[in-house]
Image 1 (cartoon, one colour):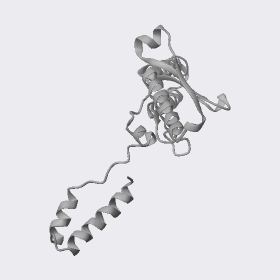
Image 2 (tube, helix red, strand yellow):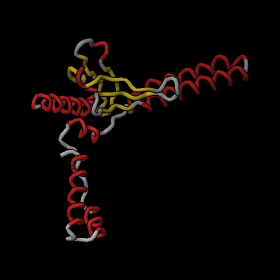
Image 3 (tube, rainbow, N blue to C red):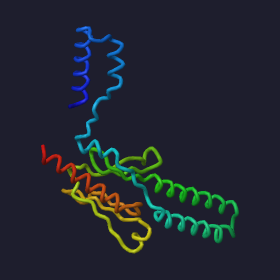
Image 4 (cartoon, rainbow, N blue to C red):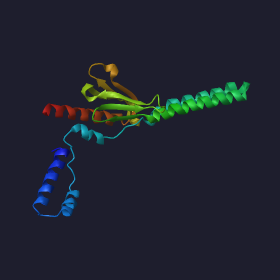
Length: 198
């Protein structure tokens, strides 16, 4: 039974009871406040909304941080000998760019909903957005594991596109990437089974 059907049926019952004088209107309202509409949980796509959101692992920050520190050191050890002002300006620019890259990495979110598998990222308004693969186009999800990823639970994830693999999702340093892949494949299989049952 859908929510609309439930509401219409309760209104008919309420009107019937009041018309026959079996109970007064105040009691009917109090009674139906205690009855909640049934949740439409038959559709797997609606249940998907309860799945967790995944982020980038701390391992994704290692290279950007090391590169930022290296260029800061290079700035101080070279430009600093010739001009303190120029060194300070370059230092600020390098630090700002490094911080921006770190914040962008932090902004990554990997999630699924009723329409597909998605990645959200970006800080600046013109660079912020979501991209991914719709369920109807998903082939399968896999993750690649080596000793490093096994130790730190940081995986490279690939979600294939049925018609053009270049339109799929490729993401590195996904924290709990193995769990993310399992979640995607289970949800995808659930949607396939639901469609076959219809």
